[in-house]
Amino acid sequence: MDWRIILGSSTLPAVILFAARLGMPESPRWLMTQGRTEEARQVAHDYLESPSEALDLSNESTRPGTFGMLFSRGYWRATTFISVFWFCAVTPYFAIATFAASVLSDYGLGDGFGGAIGINGLALAGVLASLALIDRVGRRRLTIPQQWVCAAVLVVIGLWSSAPSALILACFLIFAFANAMCTALTGVYPGEIFPTEIRGLGTGFATAFSRVGAGLGTFLLPLAMHHLGAGPTMLIAAGICVVGAAVSQALAPETMGRPLSETSAPHADAAVEKKA
Image (tube, rainbow, N blue to C red; front, top):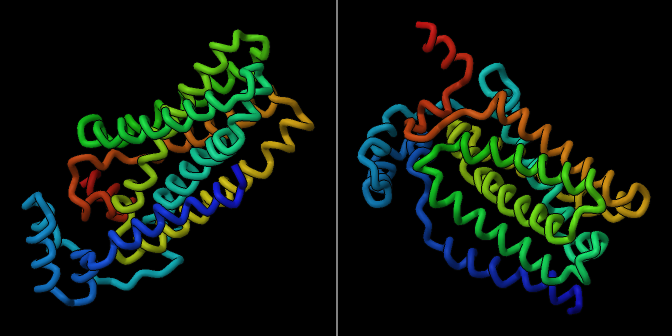
């Protein structure tokens, strides 16, 4: 298929999303920061299912936000976590998924087309699994173990180049599923760990940081495969997953079941409150 058709087909979901967003109300928390209290309460009444979420609006801060707040004492942990986690999650995935057919063929899996379809299909299944489990098992359990799994299977692929083709394919499929499960949390964590005044800034910064990783993975993987070989390239990808897993292990908060005003509170304040 012509590459223009492949890239141009992305227009269709973009148009659908654009149409779906028409008429969406403003966030009640943003409305609160603008002093539009009654409008905020009405939006909360119409759209929020939990009474506790609507009640938590009264705890909304109205202070102005700045870019520097992302790296302040209270929020540098949140900024570091979501940026590094997002970067390390998408870098190996974009590299492997974009060139799945050629990567799999290098491991003796025919032309790799069927395997590439399987990798992307398992990624979709991973996202759906996260959606089903996120409010049952918590955020950390969907973020940290999966990254270690991704690192482990990539190490197997990198070190055991003579492994049976079925095992190599299984490892790639496990990687796709586990990676998608944790990557789905990149759409949840920013909204829960940044307060309203810097939520857009924090999400934007982390997204931009992750796009750097996506670009590097996409453009450097063919060079690495050519100059270093498949094994070392997969070990580098595994190392990136290890970094993401370690940072998440140290910094990822558990936000399930907690009010937004609490999960997005400055870290330093939370530590003081805990000691008190």
